[in-house]
Image 1 (tube, rainbow, N blue to C red):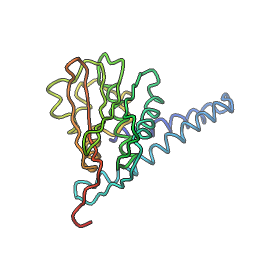
Image 2 (image 1 turned 135 degrees about the vertical axis):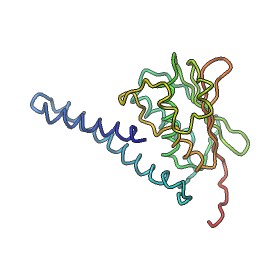
Image 3 (image 1 turned 90 degrees about the vertical axis):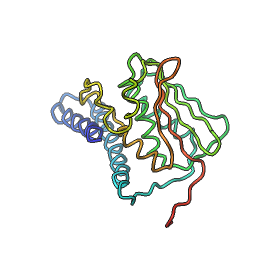
Length: 224
């Protein structure tokens, strides 16, 4: 997570330095573009920090997720839009139910989970050319799946995908290649807080698939 927070900070410092070091040579349009980048990264960082604070308290049981009924299609669209800003050349194919579907969730947190899973495909799925983002309704829950056509996940990695050690498994990443997500272990914390489940598997026809579920109905909590 420290890397994920450092990345937008680095972008902000870089844009600010670009303006201060080259002010006389930059056009008004260039400066405005850099300022917009700084604004966007700053807003993203504020949202990220605000959302991570309750997650860090989950260990002592004091955190509460603020859920509202959210339109799944809107959450999916927001996640894909954010992802495409960083990876415009990667094809993402969304598949959502035709019927209007509302799910109780913290939309910002779930959107960040989806973005993280999409970006992990880019960073870790060797040979990947296409991603599918599939939403299906299954009884009293909704399943979100991110699938790719890459080389799949090492069997030795699958059991510990979400324990915080996966990101450095191949030892090849540099800070510049770290994704701007929130880490798979934090994704699990978010899904757990929503009373859902998350898991990873390899597809029979090749590629990997990471799925998580969210319940359609709120559960009563003792003491609430």
